Amino acid sequence: MPTTLSWVATALNPETIPASLGFVESFRFSDSSSFVLGERRQVFSHRTNKGKSQKLSCCSMSSTSTPSSLITSPTAGEEKAAAAVSSEQRVNSVVLKQAALVSERLRSKANLEVKPDIVLPGTLSLLSDAYDRCGEVCAEYAKTFYLGTLLMTPERRRAIWAIYVWCRRTDELVDGPNASHITPTALDRWGSRLEELFQGRPFDMFDAALSDTVVKFPVDIQPFKDMIEGMRMDLKKSRYKNFDELYLYCYYVAGTVGLMSVPVMGIAPDSQATTESVYNAALALGIANQLTNILRDVGEDARRGRIYLPQDELAQAGLSDDDIFAGKVTDRWRFFMKNQIRRARMFFNEAEKGVTELNAASRWPVWASLLLYRQILDEIEANGYDNFTRRAYVSKVKKLASLPIAYTKSLTAPAPASSPLIKARPNQTR
Image (cartoon, rainbow, N blue to C red; front, side, top):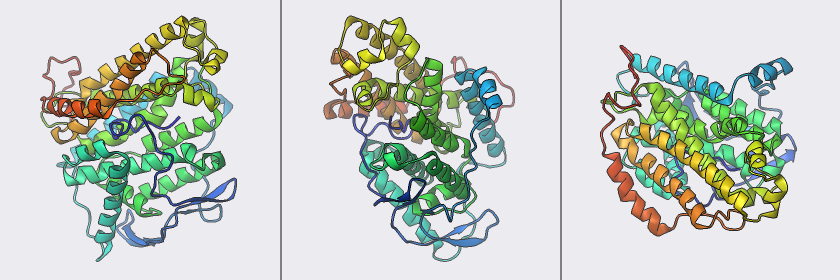
């Protein structure tokens, strides 16, 4: 199941996800546990956390050069303890930590656009080239969203491009043309590489852009690590026994993008909403988009042996895996789909509450994403709930018609203090 680049870039091509990112020329494998990404050999000079400059060659991740993963498998005791906590509670704890981190860091900074330290001659141009390349990738694969980012400040849009590219590259590991060769060890190395770029040691130009972004903005590593965990789930799990399990998966592969992006997009200065509530709205949009992906792609996923639907709810509707693989639209299936679509729309409604609270320059692309992706649910209904043989997509005419609506909504001021999004909290800092 492809990652939904929610909150960042689902507005572009909601009906199709390209088979290849285009900027990675090849995945070369020497065995099942080591790989090299790309063939570009540009060398970057990038600051370490101590302000020193160090040269980095492009992206080698072989077993001889990359440290072992910092991600470890949970013990039996840890798994038992985690089972006692619902997915919503687990995700909420991450949201609270991310919101607290942003509040803490912003207390010591005048604004989000923090000026970079002095860099060595020539390196600023290389970093600018890295951001430009990220922008090119975004423009190629996410045209509508890319146009929306042009309304942001230069610092914000470059940072969003860098996050977008990292998410797409991560998604390609398990959904790209070489996904069959990816192993848990390979994802461990990708996680180690993530740790390195957060410490100021990027492997290539795209990593360099993200490494610079996390220095300038209060972006935390946890959502990035969680997204990799979502990729790991796709390697070992093809069924979800209930919505609690599915919710956690949706957070990993899509909700995380909202947590990555809010620190960059920023909260409106006149917003009265708590930081936590805005993060929760970003999370809701990610969940809504991924649920929409799942409902749209039932037939496609079934042909790959995957069913991303709550098993207990299927059983309650009198359906089984065999019914999914048979791909017949019945009254039971229509009843089941109506409930699934109703749930996805509830998450979209929750997401709407937070979009207005974002910085004014960041709202338009998010509104476009929300409105366009939500229309996929309408198309599933229009197709008579046949998501086995018919792929629901939003026509270009409908997309174009939605963009001015999204722009108009982006002009709406943040909610007043009486809004249900607002939670009284004295001396709150965002």
